[in-house]
Structure formats: structure tokens, C-alpha cells
Length: 340
Image 1 (tube, rainbow, N blue to C red):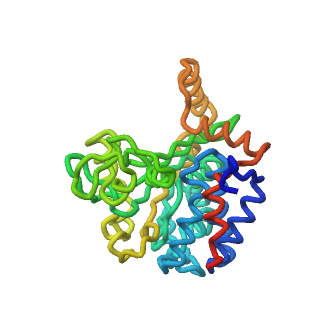
Image 2 (image 1 turned 90 degrees about the vertical axis):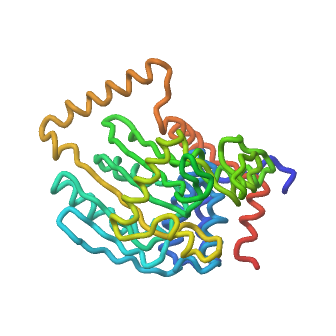
Image 3 (image 1 turned 30 degrees about the vertical axis):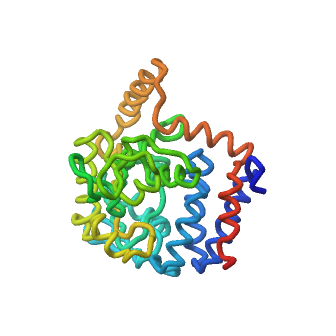
């Protein structure tokens, strides 16, 4: 199998495999379904670093005892425009799913609402969450810290996580405008994929454990990643730490990696999601003002520039028809999950 170019699978086959493997390491069925859906979405949309590769990451977090495999999320309403979900140590996906209906309800009633996910484990991208909110006709913003893997601008020792920021904007005649980017120079999964493939990384992605720039992926993983854009990315990373850490009573990235206790699990902590109903500001004029947004998108595309998420949507259209192809070595690693 390792000599083949890859293993072809339909999305349904991939989903069934992910669910089965998650259950095989002890993850409860409702969690396995929610987590598998996120992995399939990443693979479907051509995001290999957030696709089925993350099955290895999630299974390791379960085996290491970082995740509570049968956690039952608890939804509460601390204030009229706020929703809180205590994930009880489970993966974030199910906690988000349990809180989403109330978040949408409150945003439509009051124009704006926020969802705090507390005590959850993260391993994936945020764009599926903001896309779901934007598909419901609302504007969405989501942030979360991670483990302290990233050095601040001007330093070489980890303080921040990769600290992604995700945004979703509804569009009347097509899929939402969505972006999701780490405030680090690159997602940590990209470095891990380079390590697995034995490929060097660019010398501006990170430092080794002694604070020296390096092209060795393994050395960066053992040292510190860099923020994107120097001090600008560093400031945004600090903002994410504050919004989805102290503001909602949850961990910073430094506290998260301390709580891991060298188990090598996924980040532990919180997530802040904000949903805004355009009609709350605009009333009957909402369609006119959304059309002004469409004019901006058209001005971008007329120049030959690509909107964020356009590549994902193109990959999605292909994979829905043709399925996906999983690298043979990765497939072999996945098939070993739950067999030891």
C-alpha cells in the first residue's frame, strides 16, 4: 500500500472511518460524530493540515487522558445576550453544536450575542463554526488560544498559541465569505506535515530550542513558532489570549500547555464566538447594504484577486463529486488506531 499514490475514498467512507476509529479509542458516539464531521470538512475542502490527519491528533488526546471521552456539555445563560457552554473536558465540537441554536436565537432577538465555550479541548480549524453561523444569515467572529507554541515578536520563547481568528459573512447568492487564519506564521499542522514528509520548512517559520532560526521542522516543533507579520501578528495573538482566556474565565495558552502535563495532547481551554444579525442594525434596509458588500467582493475579483475561502469551495465542489485521496502512509497510520 505504501507504494501507491494514495487511497481513494468517498466522503461517506471517510466519515465512517473517522467515526469508527474515534469510537475504537473510547470516544462517545455523539462526540465521535461531531469530531469526525470537522475532519471530513477539512479533507473535503482541501485543507490537509486540518483534515483526516487530525484523527491521529484526536485519538492521541483521548488515549493520553487529555479529553473526557463521554463529557456531557452544560448550556447556561449568564446574561441576556450571552451563552456559555461548559464542555466538561470534552472536544469543542459537541459543545459548540449544543450552544449554537441558543446563540442564533439570542443574536436574532437582540441583534448581537456571544457564545463562550469553556473547559473544552481544541484540535481543528474554526472556519466550520463561523461558516455554520454565516449560513444561517448572521455575521460571525471566533477566536481561541491553544498551547504556548509561539514566540512574541522580538522574542524566541513560546508565550502564545497559534491563536486563530475566524470570520464569516453571509452572501445572498452563494456560500459565505469566510476566513480563518492562525496568528502564527503558519498553522502548527503544516509544520507537522513537513516533519512527517521529511521536508524542510522556511527559515522564518520558527526557532529551535536554543532560539536560533531553523529549517528543521522537528526543531521548530521542539522550539518556538513565529507570529505572522512581526509585531502585528503578535498583538493579534495577545488579543486572542485575552478574549478567549481571561475574558471568559478560561486558560491562556501558557496555562493550557502546563495543564497538559507533558501528555502531548491538544490544547485545553476556551473559545469565544460572536454572532451579529445584520437586520438588527439595518432593519428593512439589510438587503441593500449586503449588496454593497457584494460590490466590494466583485471589485476584488475583477482584479483577478481571490477571495478567502474561494479555494476551499472549489476543492469542495471537486471532492463532493470525486471523493478524496489520502496519502498511503497517513492511511496506514490511521488504520493502526485502536488496534494496539
